[in-house]
Length: 321
Length: 198
Image (cartoon, rainbow over all chains, first blue to last red):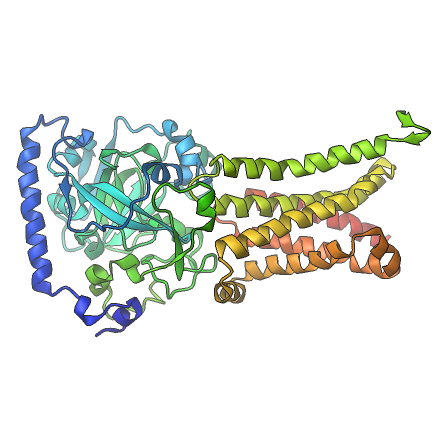
């Protein structure tokens, strides 16, 4: 039994044997393949863009109570649209998402400027209900629609020099937060290649079976459920395969507070917010009653330790936070 | 001048008006809360708004003495106590929202917050300094303490500084507002310093 498992409160009996995990994966892949044929039967242009066709249920989903659509779409951190939690929804219309293209470059065999349709076309859309833990000590449960980032990465064939993947958010000069220069734009994030290839890591195109609302990072965003929310970069226009660890926006802004990895870790103290507990915004929150909602204990790796902790074997998680 | 039986009623009327104006942000905050307009996580904006209101009223109360010398009129001094007490009122709400609603009176969590986060310590210092000032704000206490009252109430300078430092320290990303308060406070404090040196 490893040290992190004790920290995470995981009992040996909780750990899924590798064979079972592999079976689950095969089952999932089978269902993805089945879904793909269903999607291909639908008119090709409308496919993923309109979230039409079957949305495949994922084994990765939690059965915890979901945050309401209203909660998910009115309480956001998207600083390009403003720093107040209500700003992204308020200014959502100012983000222009059509046309949209994604530049894929760096250490891969098929770099290029891909239209959104080109990016999405081959991928069957799944529904994955993930926990989302913000570094500000609140959390939600969100039904995302999208696909594994790994499936896109395989298509563009990264080479052996691709040790990391970096991402950039669109910069549109007339957005209120961009004008204010609250961060050094463009917003940047990054993952180690094995984190990016992990089956939990997804590119999301929608939520609650609908197009991704602009305030949630339309039309294409990253979702990495075991990391603090700011790692899940919104409105992606660039994906680069690089050899060196890329710069990330919050790390540039305050290196001692926001590390490159940013894995959810209740044991690592943060200078602003205690990370040991969180306020879960589940159901339809915001009424008078939500003043008295308690906090719950934050789980190591946001409860995804079983799936991802092996990525960090032998690493000092206090140092590499 | 409006007068009733020889008494000038303007000052009293003005005081009521200022009192209602100072209470307005509280009323609108309660109203937004009851109407569900504070968003999905109301504890967050409640903490935020009560905190900035406390700082604003501290700055207003510190601006009245300089205003008196600028205008060469004494009427600004009549509002000092009320503004100071409103600052304490909003600070009290701020601390209550934090301890009761946010931390659910979990003493371990509050203690850890104090020990690990200097900005919480700065905020606590500000509040604990304001507490005796609010208690000794009655006319009776002013008379009883005499010269010592004046000395005691100089603690408001340290309290204000601690409160603004608390805000500057915790601000993330958008740091304009806390730095505006810091700048205003520096101007107000340097006014005292200049008079002291002269």
